[in-house]
Picture 1 (cartoon, helix red, strand yellow):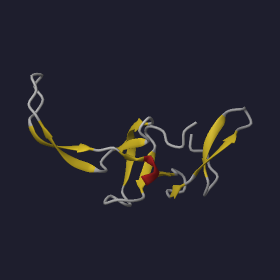
Picture 2 (cartoon, rainbow, N blue to C red; picture 1 turned 120 degrees about the vertical axis):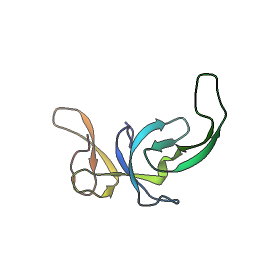
Picture 3 (tube, rainbow, N blue to C red; picture 1 turned 45 degrees about the vertical axis):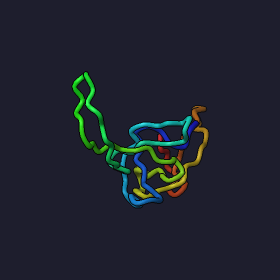
Length: 104
């Protein structure tokens, strides 16, 4: 079970976008990186392709290391560490270490 999942709301802990929040758009577990919506925007020079993509300078969301983000709890609306526990029905769930509420 992973600490971060797609569609989790996270807060950036370091870098030029420190303090900004966004939703995880994509997880790249083999590279230990995440792509967060609206965060870590970089300009990329795109070459014209035959399939009709736009050429020029395009702003895209770049991947960032997953240690630079923290999960935001929906209940207490603060960034938190993630814990794991087994519910009474035997399912393993993630929970907020601040308010003890389930994240899943």
